[in-house]
Amino acid sequence: MKLGVALGQGGIPSALIFEALADWVPFGKLMKKVKGAYSTVKKGAIGEAKEAMEHIVKANGKHLTAEGLGEAGAIIAAQAKNFKATDFPSRYHGIDSIWRDGDKLIIVEAKGGASALGKTVSDGQQMSRNWIEAKIAKLRKSADPVDKKWGEDLYTASTKPGGLEAMVVKTPHGGVPEFEHKTWSELGVDPTVF
Amino acid sequence: MNTKRGPNLVLTRPCSKMFLPQFMKLHERLKIPPTAVDVSGCKRMLEMAENPTAYELETNLDGWKSNLPFERYLLGIHAYLADELDCAEEQFQKLPTDVVEYFFGEWRKAFLPVKTKGDFRYWKKRAWMEIYVSGILTCAIIGQWKQAVLISSYPDQECGLDVDGKPADRSFLLAMAEWLTHGKSTVKLTTYISEAVQSKTPRAREEIKLLEAALNGSAEKAIESFSAYMRFYQKKIFPLNDMTEKQSKMGTFFWHWWMKEGVNVDPENTFSDFVIRISNQVQK
Image (cartoon, rainbow over all chains, first blue to last red; front, top):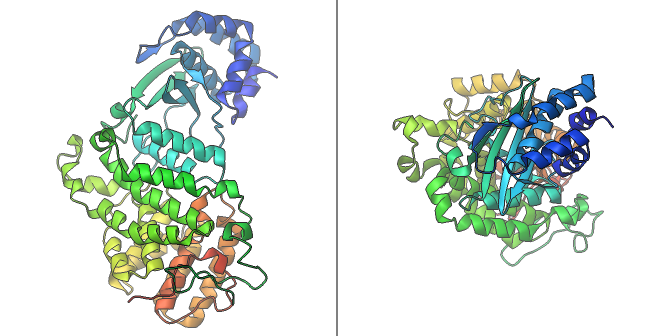
């Protein structure tokens, strides 16, 4: 399956996409190169990914959706931060992916192409603390035990210092992944914006 | 009519004669898998919410205050579905106090973010819709109608939308609050009703019919609107992947409201498996 098609389908746990991409030579090489290189950086652009991103665009052509491009960028950024993939099922609840860094859980939102963080009619920009709390509540209410468990884990993480964090990764067409990583308490300064 | 009796309850859920309640739990009758009715997980989460960490209190007091009624409602509904009725009743009894504390508690004065420059209207833009519904619903279940009126004095036009909330649902809830606080038709109420009726949100349109029947006051209309709403609920709301919708919120509210008014809107218990009843005690 073309990478872009796989990436554009959604609902695939990051761990599976991560494994598929790691086997692809340009991506695999990049993964090794950047692994952990940005682990202490809060905000930045991953310049090393330029060549691999060009490969992805070239290899997948029209199949590569903005969503797929964003997802690929997020995986590179997570690798650069040395995060571990989880089996979080993204589906319909609004959270793109969840990664681990030791005991810490990191909610990662991927934006590809020209897309930006959404602003809901209510008081909560996508990835703001309000928004994340609402999404955790949605998981907690789910009839699916897997979703529910994730909701419990995310809520529990949010009650501990450094337990829950959030990262937004934007990957424009022809560009490299740009990330911004915030702690839960940083998100609390203004709970309506990321 | 079959009934079940618990130690503190006068009368618990009636259920259709085709079921044997002593052998089938409510969630089994509703075909909800036991894995979805995880009471122990909810108890653990509520315990955590009742004992906040210093970090939570320091960094996310408002999030914690709004989470407490949410966790309590979640446990209440799970326990009810699992036939742990004492546990369910305990949560429904306590929940209105949590809601009052979230809406009117002194903590709001001390926790205004700097950017608001002391403007209390900030709170009106924070989450309220689901919390309000859980508040009036549990007041109805336990027959605390005065408390429902107090809780209904919070929502007003300045209240924003919850994340994922729909404008029509907001209009419906504002209409409910206006009706419960004034008990009659007002200009504001007419406006809210008209906003909800004109919306493309079927749920709000159907719920408004329940409210209109209550305003109309006729028992015939009440039974008709209740049956129509519950059929809509069974078809469109119950199947949602949301455990808090596995019992009808507005069906339950209006069933209790009409009982208070001396009208049984479901005399044949056709919809009794979707209406929360923990007691037949009615307090004015």
